[in-house]
Amino acid sequence: MKPIRLRYLIAAVFALATLCCFAGNRLYVKDFAINPGETKIIEIYVENSKPIISLQADIVLPAGLTMVCDSIMLTDRAKKHAVMASENDGVYTIMSFSMSNTPFKGNNGPIIEVPVVASDDFSQSGDIVVTDITVQASDRTTLIKNGQSQSKAYIAKTFTE
Image (cartoon, rainbow, N blue to C red):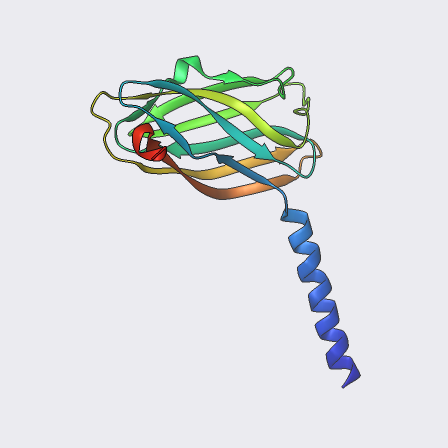
């Protein structure tokens, strides 16, 4: 009986160690409200357990919302980092990196600010889907690989009711 209990104990320790390695690492966009015809700055948040040097993600916005790729900005968590965004068939790819491997400041908070424009006929709340998330730590380990997150964009007048 003792060897079986030991195996379960070892399995539990490995499971907890695995969870600890991946816990606290996430890239996401918070839910937000926006009016038709409005431009709003949304933030891309990263929670990281180790210092990170780069990130990449694909974002799909609800119908009627458009990301302004040439106006994307970094927050004060960035230092010696570049940021870029592009759109292909409604999928926005965003990436930020440091050519000198300088880590982003801190472990939690917004890293990228993205202007989003709601069309004049934006009339239905929808999901913001973030996929293919990759976050690289300064020690060259991958904190997130093929990650996903989801949030909501609401029409402001219905969000506040």
